[in-house]
Image (cartoon, rainbow, N blue to C red):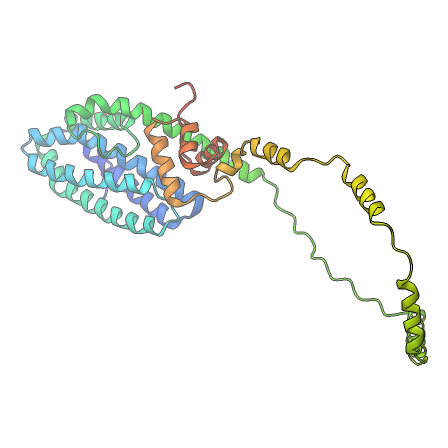
Length: 346
């Protein structure tokens, strides 16, 4: 992919993009975490804008030069790559499936670029002069600046339709990109300013104090006293029986007095159980009990929320109710994952 230095025409602009895309693939593969996510976002935007510019500038030119079959092959490859990009955009960068799909996408893109350089570029260079190539190079860069930045696999593939709808879709995509970048910067700023948790010193178990002399003396005295008590002769059975008889012959309290005392005690006002149950039943269940606020988000749930937010048909409150989450939780997830939600006034 050597880039000539003599001129900057259409072919040179395409070769520069091919080299930039290869560098972005290497950056995604060599980083991790937040850096990997930012590198993939840059790669996705570059691939989409490059392919859209080719479809609006290069493909019509190939068709006029008699290369419609070549154009159809390249267009089918580009549509397949756009579908893979849409699937990758719904995955987290630490997902094992992400690495597998990224490697396959890289192989397809390299094969696609090689086919363009060997089949399309010689045909274009032989048919056009330097001035026309330079003019088309300017048109190619202008088309990239207005093209969409996100994959739309269900969108139109016709160059004529893309020339009309591409700038409109590009405005919407770039607005979403700006909101996504702002959310990512805010999240990284919060992580940078968050104080590191202080490690609390581990509590050591208190050492047992050695028993003092007074305590040991007391224990010994107690043991001797217990021994002396146990050596005393037991009382005679007759004496025990007499004492038990005296206790049993005491007059017992009248049953009526006991009943009156129990009645007085029971007349104290007590909270009725039925009223307490009714008041407990009237209390509405709190929002926390109906939501999954404490539970972590699964990958499938995050992907579904991203798709709903990307379609712009549901508000933040509707998305939260669908998934049993709070509005604040959905907004925190959007800031963390880097996707935007529908504005309130829409």
